[in-house]
Length: 389
Image (tube, rainbow, N blue to C red):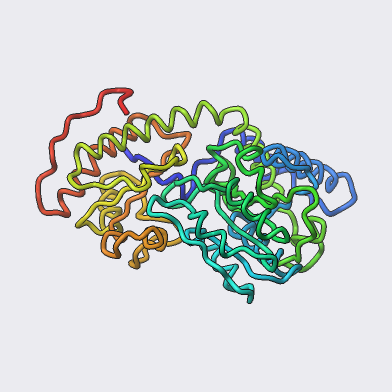
């Protein structure tokens, strides 16, 4: 069997999304920018999806801008703000590269807020970075590598007091599948999501802007689609799929999150028993239900991932965009993890489709792979009982 435990990188398409997309991959094909009946049907489908995304984010439909995914949504938020209102950008040290690289490319001063050893934004260190000149503060809602939930609401309150001119952006890509964004991201002016992290297709995402947010400067230029904020012909099939996934998520999130959290805890408990010296990253703070990040001293994460792949377990050593890299994880380094240990990370991320059998398979494969890399026999730990953890 193959146990897919890399849902933080990409997850399966929800059946409701696949069904909604199917007509737009075949007989339906209109360009929503046209004026005839075929185009109007496409426009109606896009508008229906926009309503679903607005409900997911807790904003007005007019504040939803469709993009090609989380990276473009993050780029549009950062570059769109500083392009329209110059000033320093403040980011946390563990932001996704789509935020960090955009901030660096903006040409503005970039102030980096450190995180604690537990992997969450250090609010005491954030305060001194804020002043009346700051244009944007970006704090992700869930870290893409460790799954640690960030104190977005507390950070936003601090921004309102010390940098009242600044807009607050949150990369909610990893949070959308697990948290009610209408409340969890309510403190942010701008919210980025990506389709394939919440049951939608790859290649589509959205940036949500709350009412009253000043106009952003476009990053893409052309025909002026999406209220002249994001030019380019709409990916109708992808947008429809994203909308359908959002609607399904609203119905199923709570039950799925509870079940997956139980599986994640069971997996963590089993690994603690069977892998000597394993360290559960960010175990002391709230994490997204599907995330389990561990460090295995004496083992290189990328090599472990390769062995697990041979054993039928799909995992990663960190963020998917860094897969194959031999450098230590910037997220772990920002947490103060020593360089050698920062190369020993393993991310096992569960999703709505994860089963008990997947967890059992991983609990056999991971200890065996670690033992092989350490040159010793696997530790025969007590097998977890169903529901344990």
